Image 1 (tube, rainbow over the protein chains, first blue to last red):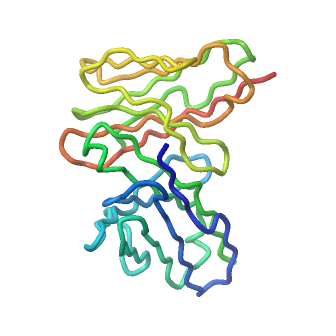
Image 2 (image 1 turned 120 degrees about the horizontal axis):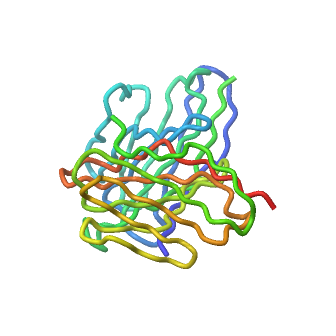
Length: 119
Length: 111
């Protein structure tokens, strides 16, 4: 089945550091990838939709200058948390859809998430 | 705004019992999907039911969809301790909106 690899799985860094998270579709092409944020015991909150070769679409309330998204190829999207602060600590999850399999009625395939802890 | 709303929020059962989780949503959909998340991990797709389907089975899973009531249920039969996880429904809107996840049901299956 379709596999999405997310790296790193766990990051601890000092306040002010920028952190890059990678999301790769390993065996399919993903024209669109999604980035979610999840707080403990809560659901996933969509942050942005990443489109290959174009600008990401951010959800209301998500700062695009804070969370930079790049989707330079059909298999890779990156999320950079710039100048991270303790309030950015969270679990970040990416997902992708295999649009070659049909635009609709296809599941999303999720990475294993990245736990970000800012000290 | 949240589209899917699961209930109950938490469910604790004994191994071997059945677990039923419900999901309600608000807008018209292409399909509804159920996902499972183990603690600290990503989501695993369980089952997709299209808007023109009423029931679907996959192993010990049974999903129903009632579009007139805008609701779905996930039944896990003969539960096992390994089924302990959070379960989310997500809707794929007719109007091109992205997936919207409900708050999830935390299932605990006690050995």
